[in-house]
Length: 488
Ligand code: 5AD
Ligand code: SF4
Image (cartoon, rainbow, N blue to C red; front, side, top):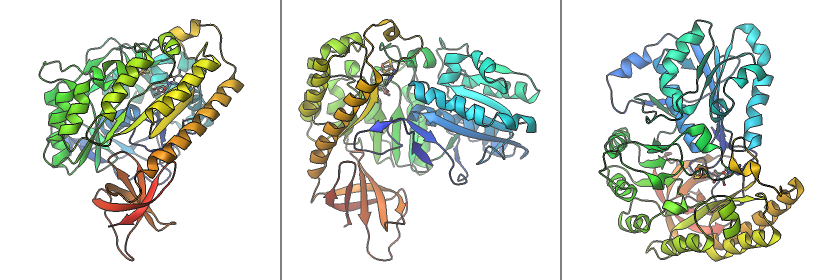
């Protein structure tokens, strides 16, 4: 089950696991057997599934959609190595945390988890820390949590099979050296947890070095996969019955096909034309690299979703400059004008940070006025959190936490009003949704619109729907974070 981390405070809009929101992957219920796709080498299917059943692992994922998808690949790798996934720490021989260090709270959560389960070491259980905290803290993790035996950053996942052999032999193992790698983690073993929506990483790492952000230090430099490999994976997913594809990257707009065949917009168009695929999403975009060709391609390829997530971070050019975001408020609004000029009604969502060092009341007011000017459908809002290694650490004029909290509350309230207004425009419309599940308590089905909004709906008495199917729903009510309606 995908659950949002408590730290993340979307002010409105999609309560989604599919978007680039910060979430925790937990198994509140025993997990469904993961659906294994072997995109390129089907001959490994039998080998992968025939492993011994006595090696067990539990994996919990923190953080963004990239981490969730990395975990799908890590799980696939472990299954291929003969491990079996179990739903609880108690049942597992190997306990893994795929970690996030984007904000301090996310990082602390991992150390709390490690402390909570330390006593299980006496039963011979082994612990591994993967992902961004692993890369950031490195071998210091062994000092802070001596019961950990494996530390592996995301750029070293290719080495996992050898690392597993080492820890099985009772040794410690680290994979931290590959931040300068040119390779992506392409694996033929991906344990996909959603049978309808498939995630495909097209670019890893980030070269932008925004002043507040730890990602370039934890995920390494930008490297893109070839468009032919990405398209081959999409076709494999379509053959397996997937109808929605989400392209992932820290900055998908700076995608550069190593074979020089396709721009990002051309890749989007080609994705949208893969037979069997009904919806294509992409996240995350960087305004500096967001070209008008992306809006044109959305307009011309019907399977590309009616949604753009374009993080702005601040409405003040002065703060954007201090954040090293490489665009001004004016330039950002230029991109928004392109999106508003699209022939399709596109929803626009964003990320915002309040309380960046030196942010004045006037700067903050500019962020508030930007919300009005853009009219976001929803926004993910955060208090600035100082991160190791980042340039912003050297800036003076830290904003007190109480003031950050006040600004966050004001921002969220404003966005709530805007989202409420934006959602009202759907009243009376008939919208196609992908069925995501049922809320038995409410007797409602849960659907997702192309604009990435949640649309809860009623069906005729006794009717059952299949998750992953598409149905038309007439919108009869709207709220700040969702819509409601009746199946047509
Ligand atoms: N403090 C607060 N928010 C941050 N983000 C990234 N780094 C920080 C930080 N140090 C937010 C940005 C980004 C989103 C994924 O997380 O808004 O777009
Ligand atoms: Fe971080 Fe900026 Fe890169 Fe996004 S673009 S991952 S905020 S450095």
